[in-house]
Amino acid sequence: MSETIQPGTGPGEGQTIKFEAAISPVLDAHCDPPVHRLPPEIFLEVVCNYIQRDTRIRDLIRLTLVCKRWSIIVQDAPILWTKINADEGPLAVRKAMQVTKDALLDLIFNHTTARMDKVAFVKSVGDQFGRWRTLVIRLDKPDWDLIFEELQKGTPSSLEALHLSSLSMADMSIDAVSVVRGNWPLPRLKEIFLLNIPIDLASLQLSGLRSLTLSSTPGASGTDIINVIRGSPAIESISLECLESFTRMPPLQEAFSHPVGNPSIQLASLVHLSLYNIAMPFQTFLLSAIATPRLMTLRITCDIPNVSDAQLLFDGLRHQLSTLARLTTDAENFEFVLSSWGVYQIDIGAVNLRLWMEELPVNAIEETWDWIFNHLGKPLKDLPAHMDVNDWEPEIPALLEWLTHRLTVTRLRIQTDPYYGRAVLEPIIPMFSRPTTSTPVTWLFPQVEILETNLVQTKGNDDLVEMFKNRHSAEDGKDGVAAPKPFREIWLTFGGKSGLGEPDPVNMQFLRKVQTAASGADVYWEGKKLE
Image 1 (cartoon, helix red, strand yellow):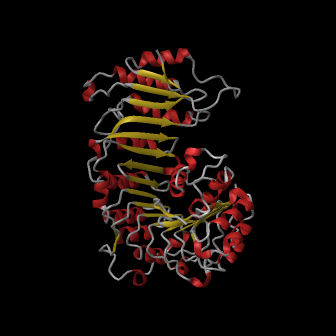
Image 2: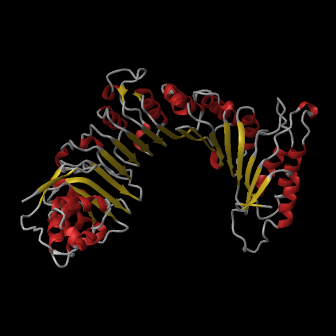
Image 3: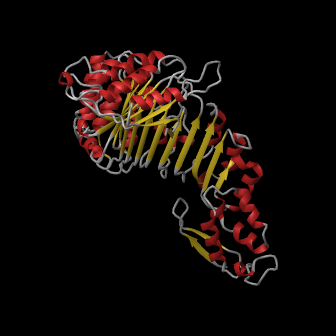
């Protein structure tokens, strides 16, 4: 009997694969002789390097049908069969369970593509709890009772990754349940992903994680999360999203042994941190408690309904100023978005901040962004900005003038509904046709060289021609105002579909007017340059 070690690069590396002595190098008339001369361990190396991680069980079965020798080698290599997906149906699952022997298993059930019932799938692999390495279950609705009942029959002590998700929201009033029997710890678990799952997080006794993703997870408290993070100093990725149970601050005495003012959790391996719609008190608490010297991406999305929440945002970010400076130091430009429903966003370097500020007055919005602009590690006025204005908010005209004095916008995109967008373009486009009314007087974003905008179905496009003409013919120094840069590129689209009972919003005559008004600029229509 011969054996080889499959080194691999993922879970399962180092597994010993044994071959039956019945394998003979004698030529088989049904096999290609050169391939058949390979020793079994070399042949298996070829197979392992050729197949993909998502190779289907049915394809492995096909290999066993080539000849007797191939059948023996492939079926005697458990590592080839460890990915068991319910998409392939009960027969394939049963076959894989037979040949995997003692190998660790990667189990996948996706309700939308599975060819067997979810409970039947769990039962078919349930007597091998100790061999589960990865468990991925995706449901279309949060119907977890029967699955949890099966899972609680054993303890997957070898589990390294747990992904449980539902497309539908879980009932927030449902009591959280334990996912394993007897609240036993999962010592090898490194990755956990929970979406819309009412799980008792504390019962898992999580520690030593490398990746933590929680979204809409009833039953997860702030204290639970802090304790998991504190117990996982080597964690590399944290993503927390829409956790209603985080509306209260975690009790300090339960979560920390040091005051929050000094970062008490050292996360030297953390490279990704994403906080989406987390209650501001908890977000501030977390940002003030962690030290992240190797963080590579920071994403924060939050609601700022009042000035006190804006102050909490500052308090949390103030503890991460050195991180913000490091993540933005190599930025050569950045993007700033103003959108409907009071959504404002900045992308600079590896930092993404997205704030919902619909309820804030304009002066509070300005003060909030002033603080952020001044604490990102470098003067934003020195960087080219790409600005995106989507649809309409009453505050936008005033904010555009305010932003003109703080950002150097070189590329501007104005996007609106092509059928009902006249109300959006009418207040905004004329603002670009003349100097500002605010002091110091200037043209709106005078450094813009590239403009992208869509046309609207009915009246409202002629203002664009007037704006192009005024900016390109402006006299430098007239009335003490510097002329804006002429546009270098103008990208026009429609963004809708014709044939809805309305005439096309543009014709060649209109485009020629644009070319004439914006003399010297390259004009593009639907991505094609006009000659």
